[in-house]
Amino acid sequence: MIQIKNAAQIAIMKEAGRITGEALCLAGEAVKAGISTKHLDDIIYNHIVKSGAKPSFLGYGGFPGSACISINDEVIHGIPSKKRILQDGDIVKIDVGAFYKGFHGDSANTFAVGNISDEAKRLIEATKTSFEKAIEVAMPGNRIGDIGNAVESYVKECGYSVVRQFVGHGIGKELHEDPSVPNYGTKGHGVKLYKGMAIAIEPMVNMGTAEVYVLPDGWTVKTKDGKLSAHYEHTNILTDDGVICTTRVN
Image (cartoon, rainbow, N blue to C red; front, top):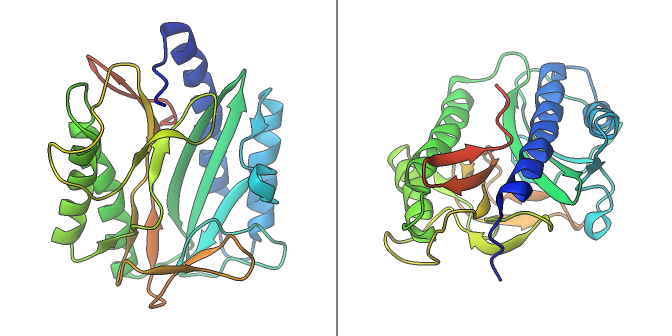
């Protein structure tokens, strides 16, 4: 069931989003060769807790980290580890959630570690742009299919593919709420969008095949062909005057 947010709830979600976005930015600023993904996770945990919130992901379904940190052909849900050391040329996806006064924020970005290839740069940029294409059609009166179509159409134009096994989602009191928000779809189809809906739009874009698989750890998702993947996400609230990206802080 879709939960429409009122003005008071939206105000809290803005704060949850701000904390989430700040934590993600701080981790992104710390990305460099030679540091561990656990170090990034510690930065995220410390900021969220210092801000009076709780990491949404820590313990969620048994997940052991405060953030999902995924490298290169890892798409999402990478487990932070002291043993995972960033290398020059890597691309690292950091996905963060913060729970504040009963509501969640959720955001992700893909960061370059040192000098990355031109093809990796193009993938990251295309993923971010596909999100912006989605935002252009995320308005009351349109439908979920319009969002997915906007993402997939642009991604295909760039020669990439969108992951279909994992999708965006509604968000609020629960980290994952209705409706599902796929990165593919047909214009004019799917759930209708209403003022006050809060949705996490999160393109997951692969350089090669859309097919993915889950590692034996039960969490980490990788591309089936071993090619790079990028991820970009914001928590968004739909209004008559446009989208409020609660997790966008710069």
